[in-house]
Image (cartoon, rainbow, N blue to C red):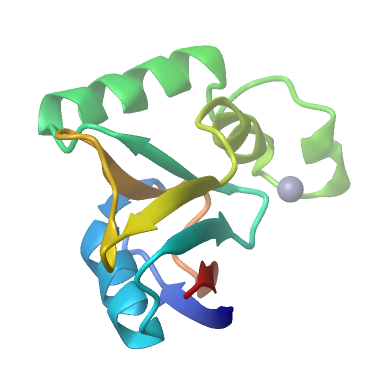
Length: 137
Ligand code: ZN
């Protein structure tokens, strides 16, 4: 069995950003040489998420609106009493899921027809990374 690890780095221009990383994840599978196995994609930060859904710009705007309604930036948060201003980002990340695991078949991400892998940043404008771990053969 092979094992392969890579970190993908991001430094978003906006505080909140949704980035389709499906291509980068597939490139990492290509580098690994794994043909049959599993891949874990994990944002190594507690104010960012990795999730799978449609690459449709209207849906991404819907997410931003929905998340701002549920966890507004200007909320009354105990976490922000620590001097941070990112309680909303922790909550938004939790709503969008944490990490994803996917199948690799024939050297390709085995995604459904509309499934795309996204990195969702909620406290950006600084260097952050995503762990990609692949096991298989
Ligand atoms: Zn915080």
